[in-house]
Image (tube, rainbow, N blue to C red):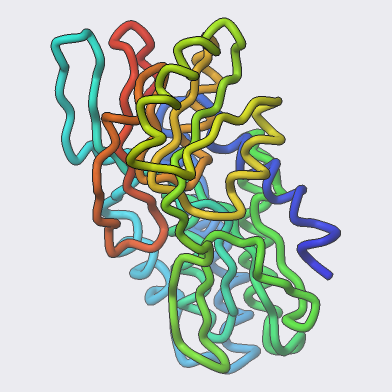
Length: 297
C-alpha cells in the first residue's frame, strides 16, 4: 500500500520543502516549470495530438497563467506587535500532503501547480495507465525541475488508485466515485503543550494548571520534534504551544502542525477561534512569537 511503504518519503520531502529558507522558492520553481514547458512545446503538442486530447498547448499555458497570478501562501491576514514584545499574526501555511484522484489532465496540471505554489506534497492516484501517459509526462517535468533546484523529487508521488490509502494524507480531493475536496483529519478540541526544551518545564506546568479548568484535556508532551509531529498530525487541533530555544524547530511546528493556533514560548490563553480559508491548499493559523525570533524568512 502506498501510505505504508511511501508515506514517509513524501512527508520528508514536504518537510524539507517547507523548511527551505530560500526566498520565494515556490515562485522560482513555478518560473522554472514555465520555461521547461515552453522549451518542450513541440513534444507536448505531439503528445496532445497522439491521444486526441480536447485541449491545446495554449490552453495548458493559460491554466499556468491563471493558477500562478496570485497566491494565498504566507499571506499575512493580520499582524500586530503586543506590549509584551510578542508578535501576533494570522497567516496562511501549507495544508500538508494532498491526495488527488487524477481524472482530468488539465485539472491535474492545475492541482500540481497549486501544490508547488503553496508548498504542499502531492499523492496522485491513477485509474487508467494508458490514459495517464500525459500526466506521467507532467510529473516527469515537475520532478526534473525539482531536481535542478535541489528540491526532493519525492514531493510528488504517483500510484495506481488501488494501491493508495488516503487516510494519512491531510487533504482529500476526489474526482472519480465522488466529487469533493476536504480536509482529511478529525478536529480535536484538545489543547497541547509541547516542551521541546526541559528548561521551560516549570513555565509549561504553570500554564497547564491555568488551562486545565477550562480545557480538561490539556496535556504536556515531550520528545523529538519528528515524533511529536507524527503523533499530533493524526488530528487537527485548536491550539498547540511549543517551548523551545531553537527557531528552526519553532518554524517546523508553525509550518507542519495542524492547529488553528501555534504559540511559541507563550501561554495557550492567547489562542483564538479562526475560520479557515476556502482555499483547500493552505491552512490559516494564528501564531505568536517573540519579536527577536523572526521566523518568516
